[in-house]
Amino acid sequence: MNIRLKHDLQQQIIRQMQGSYPNEGGGFLLGYLEADAVTIHDTIQVQNVFAAEEQYHRYAMRPQDWARLEDEADERGLTLVGYYHSHPDSPAIPSIYDRDHALPNFTYIITAVYQAQAKEMRVWRLRDDRTQFDEGTLHLSD
Image (cartoon, rainbow, N blue to C red; front, side, top):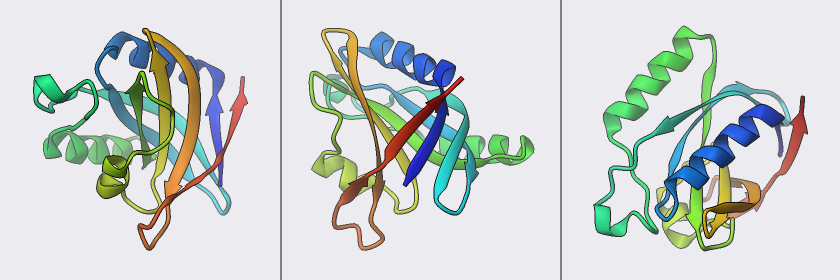
């Protein structure tokens, strides 16, 4: 799986995830699905509505946010292709919680943020049988 992301969008995600620290932050990826690649054209940050005392290691959004962003993507001729979030003071690898709440065929970008500084960004996709994530390749462009 190849993920194409413009450098300025990567920097936008990094700023958002650093700004969410010490809590998890996240949002949606809008773009296009192609045969062997996902091209991301925009990101939309979504407020973390998980219980405040759990936001340091959990992220959740309201179902209305999901529906609203699907409609917005459609209006713009794009598709909701995935989701991004941070792992404060943890590696950029999916957790069991991530796997339990992920959807197959969605792209997941996870950014590890240590002491308010983004250190690593990796991309993942959940297998159809939901047993594990496979890592993709992030291709940055201007």
